[in-house]
Image 1: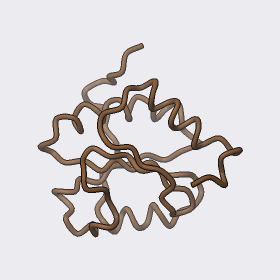
Image 2: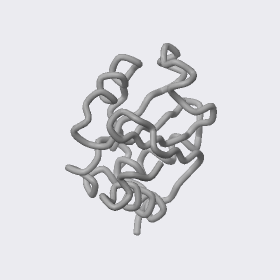
Image 3: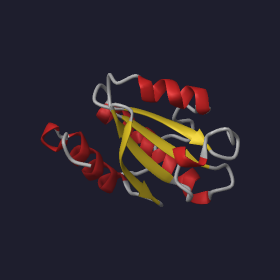
Length: 122
């Protein structure tokens, strides 16, 4: 299985206001990639996330926050290391994972946390 989407594949980027709006919309869980332009691992992770997006369409929204370009994002809103993905349910962070993650690992992570049986966890 190929972990890399086309080079043009990307997640929508938001600033602090966009993140707040996304977190207040409780229709679907939200996966946020906290990243930085200088981060090589962030550049490698994004195509993995973008390639997974169609598989989880209708079950999950995905976006990214560039913590260098959007310093107005409060330190408590994002982890200290990049890349980090954070999964939110009803505006509340339920799980984070820092560092590079392969497509199969991402699928396992998301399928576990999106399973209705795990709604009460975290």
